[in-house]
Image 1: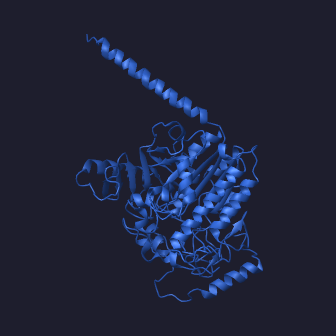
Image 2: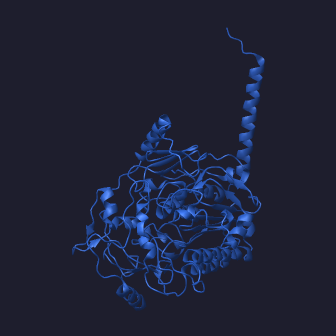
Image 3: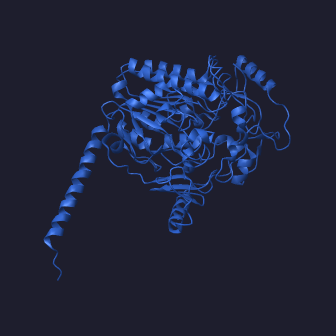
Length: 528
């Protein structure tokens, strides 16, 4: 009979008690934040590079408002997103990896032959033979954070870019839980014209500027208009009802339209400066209305930039899963809950805001579809370790390479990097670590097997070239809108060589060949 010496037994009891008490303390501390129902303002830029804002080292002085906010906030040093606009937005709203909702494929991809070929699909045609796009959007059966917070008694507002469906009403923001909507539905617009440059496969402009899902006529620069609308909405709120505001800027995404008064500046720098001013205006409105102390404010970005120089010190751009495409700046301020100038190195993915917001709002947690989100309340507000150790960026069947982060390792296709010791991803260590490669490949393949069927996408956009986005809005557009669209279309290229398109082709391999030529950035859908 083996007799256990008393010292190890006592040590075991001590350690068990310590761990249990530590866990209980974290649980208790996290519970203090649960159901506190703060206002939530989530501001997200578009295509801003890691190296562009001053708080990340830029010396150009273009972002004084963001820099000041950074000094008041906690910084997340290991915060990640998907590598392209729509997947990130879907993950934020649903708490689910983009592949689960097929949002790793954007709505416009279903009108582009090079993308359709990757899916084994062909270009669709209307009954009269006109090439058109297949309808693709965030499934209306998905539960969004807007729906969860609305059901919990929040006022919900979207100001800015949607990019999760532009045609059927059930796919638009007010069909997905937002009580107020302002901005554009598609991937990008002219900052003055409010038109998207093409509606692939159609090669001409479509109007895309709406308030509460009705077209509106407004002059001005989109970034400034977003800020003005957000300020108006904040000024209408009261302390009796919490609000959730999602401000999805299209800046600094192309086209490279320069704000008035900044014509002598580099276009990208002028657009960044305008974005910073807009963020500053919204922060001032929060303070002016007395909401500062009970408002959780997040300032972040959706994916990497189009030029690698703006990603430094990281490798890659948007549309790649290198760190430069997926690692984002993220600032969080909630007075009394976050410490000014603090930072957290816990791993966090954009999905995690979903469960965190639900916890803070006291919203219903039970839902039909499982989430990939972790509640980060304890990590963000109590200094606990992150519960996340893995991120699935893309899986087989995605536009981009299957990519998984697990601990320090990231497997990207056949490449393996230790992103902690080699954050610049200069050294592929796959050959030296075959066991790690095999393990991560098996894991990302197994998760990819959970993707639901796509189906044959039978719904079509008719007409193939609408005047304005939104099937109901396009039925009887006002005369001013018809005239404005006709004027812009008359200035666009009328003939194209066989195989030539105004949009970039689908990416191939690890490099964002999609960005070659920056076609969408250079397009100019109308003037001021």
